[in-house]
Image (cartoon, rainbow, N blue to C red; front, side):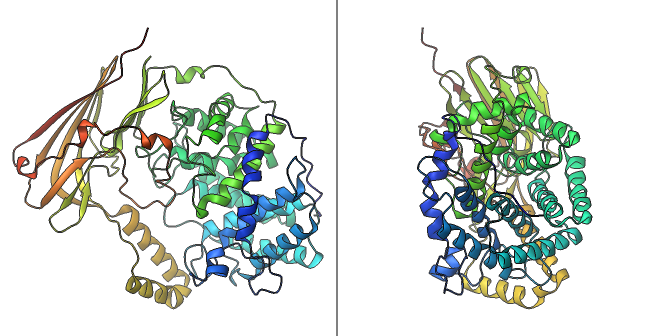
Length: 565
């Protein structure tokens, strides 16, 4: 299949929302690309590797920036000097060649360490370079074009033989399905479409009846905005009605977790992320009322940065978000831009309980409350009238005498949870927090293993499972338990906590408005509501460990300011 130059719509003032963000990052992205044609790393977009030389291998996922650059090359709009630039397409071709040069012999790519056999790096980079190839419309040199096709075919063959084994991550599987859809479209090999359908079936079979796509066993609205894009793109390419129904259901669930200040998710969700990827909702707006509402409601967040986005994240999420903005722009331009003026009816109910996700949303005339039930009642409370975060509580955190930290926030679907009239009752335990970081000796051992035993697939899979277990799943309970009761009032909430246990090993314990307990590189990006004045937080008063042999009770009233006439 020979590509045709991408046919894109004329720029309208409405769609310039995304174009502005896209144009503003061009120089930064080009600085990340090795543009020296005589350099041995010509075309590499991992600047830490080729320029600073602080790492010992190039991460394949940085090549995803070629999709964004190819869009700039293919798209004429005011203030875009890169349109149809011969110099730019030469650099992009170098990027394609470099991607091909770092492919492992089996067809896979590395993301975190050498010989990782990363499904994520193989799937995401294959998908985005396929999109870049489409934007370029046959403008790559013939030898680069042939090399890309061969590299994509090898990557697709690897995806056809491998799966994600260390956890269920819908966004990774969706990217794999989308990459294979492109591989079928570009190479014509039917087996790639069959494998794409395998990943899609796996995702949809794990979709909760509540609508959410699984991420490490739970629901994460931030990651769901990301994973939904790849599914929406597959729907565009295939027209699958089953996939559209799934996406509409997912958007309806997700709409509940758009906060009044236009932030999203956070500490009460499975992976703690607060990133917003807009493309899926702009792409689906004409076919899904919930997607149309999300797209319209969240457009101001692109400029106010109320949700973590392209202007907020680090280099590891920069290219996925830039590329997502590309497709948000295209989706907005091509859709009928249905823009409902009010909330979907499903969002107007007072209490929405999602027992499979362990999430609760309470909507009252004056406030919206979001509660992580599986996380011991972690919550965020927003004033609806002024779209402001009033109070956040991420649970209790403390330190043992041996220096190890512990917390009540660990997600546990087996927690005792009771929802009564205007009350939420929860019980839970405290677990030590595992927060290891690299030091020279650990890094040396890690790299030696990956370069020796890690060359063998079974050893490599064992290493990845070990890392996930240590960083995400490992739990060590301490002799301290709690009960939390949240009472719903018209002007706010009342929270009563009861802690009981031994103080023998506890040095200190307090409650904080924002912290996380598990490794997740895409969490803890800054959002503006973190600057809210919570210095008078009544939860912030430390608990004296000496109190713990007897029971500790504390009751906190969180009231909204009186309404002005």
